[in-house]
Image (tube, rainbow, N blue to C red):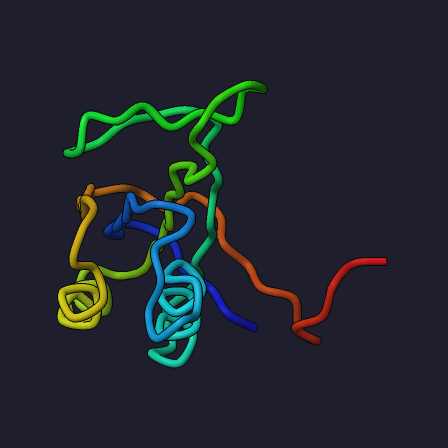
Length: 118
């Protein structure tokens, strides 16, 4: 059973939904590398509207010309493990924003079987 409590570090990667790594979605590559690195977890959140360094507004509203919606990949683990993973992000993220936040994990308990709930 996996447990993580107390002080931790959260890394959030803001990229575009259509950003790729070797013809694979970039957000998927980040999640798979985080999993391979043994990090506590990673989640991908799809935004409905936003803009970044390009100053182009991306939105999911009808009649919009943009479909490259913003995506946030959030990873939380101990500071040591997250910082060890940062070179992977440096390799993968050529355009986007990567931020680090101190956080406190109140409860994180994995299921023993690793499966999904019925």
